[in-house]
Length: 119
Image 1 (cartoon, rainbow, N blue to C red):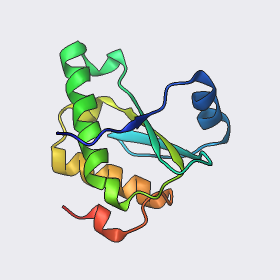
Image 2 (cartoon, one colour):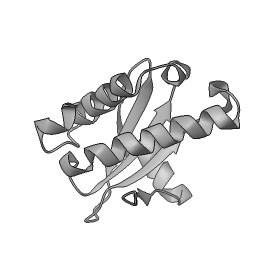
Image 3 (tube, rainbow, N blue to C red):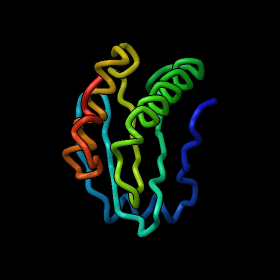
Image 4 (cartoon, rainbow, N blue to C red):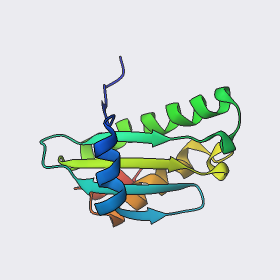
C-alpha cells in the first residue's frame, strides 16, 4: 500500500506559497516551498493542460507523488511544497525527474539528508 501524502488544499495555503515562498526552477519542474509551522510536510502538484490530455497529466502526477514518497525519509517536517510540472517532464525518465526534484528540494533546504539525492 502506498504511503499517504498530506495534500495542500486551501486557497490560503497556496496564496502563502505565492507570496512568501522560495522557488527553484529547472526545465522539467518548478519547486516552491514555504515553512508551514506544522509537524508535517504537505504537498501540491500542478499539472496544467499544456502538458497534454488527462491521461498524460495524471501519469505525471502519479510519477511526482511516487518521487515525493521515495524522498519522504529525507524530507524535513514543517514545509508546504508545490511542484509545478513543465512540458519537458512528460518525456523525462523517472530517474532523471527524481534527481531533479531531489536536487531542487535540497537547494531549498527541505531535505535533511543527502541520501535523498541518491537512487
